[in-house]
Length: 117
Figure (cartoon, rainbow, N blue to C red):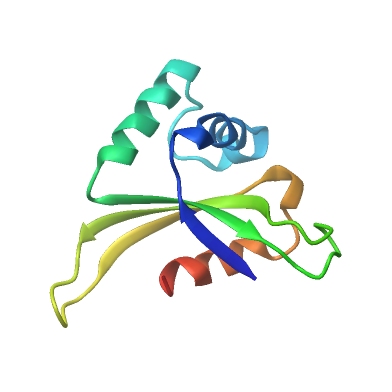
């Protein structure tokens, strides 16, 4: 099970570490950011009404986490059109799974938690 919380400034270095991971960097559309560019990016995202950035946490019976909730990735929603009442939803969802949690099915559960939020 994955739960989401809104990202904030406490997450700046966690997000930077995940974003600059070599596998993530190879898959990314944009070039790997410098520290300064990353901090500016997070500042803009946190202020942008058309973007939602979440940290994904997972907890299970102890198999991975010993009963603790662990951050396993991030989801960002870029809203192209927020739906009016009964309207059509248009957005792009970006997901990054933390390097240490890849291969355990978290991408799918992060997406599911994001679209059902």
